[in-house]
Amino acid sequence: MNNYEIFLQLHQQPTPFIIANAWNVKSASRIEENGYKAIATSSSAIANSLGYEDGEKIPFSELLFVIRRISACTSIPLSVDLERGYTNDLAELNDNIRQLIEAGVVGINLEDAAVKTLAECGVKRISMAVFLYNATYKHLDTLVKKVNAEQSFTSLF
Image (cartoon, rainbow, N blue to C red):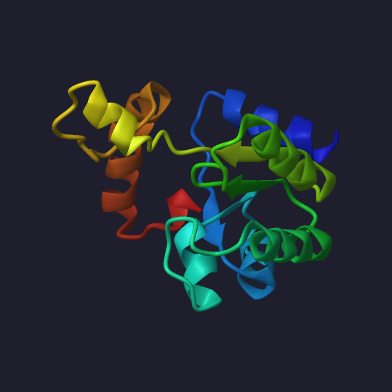
């Protein structure tokens, strides 16, 4: 199986999988060494590690460099926090995603952060509440009981 197929399978299993965030090659390598099945990136952590604020303040070319290095130095699936895509142009967004795919990325997440557009539609408040998939809720009770019984979070990893 290739990394795309592995990542897809991780999303389709009956129990949730835990994915850790990386911000450089060292953190990504540690994630892999500790038995995680996939790596995610944190836009904030990558930006901050290079002296930028979060919120697409890091140039896409610098983000891409970090992603290429992480991908080259690890072998498990890699998913990237792409913020809002680092552009407002659809063709450029497609090109950014293509470059990530060519770098070995198998998943991305995009923020739906069109604040001005939302305000124009009358949205007055956006909740940043905790988001859990239904599949997570299904197993959460059992997991919490196991963590309490073992007095350890090892069952999470």
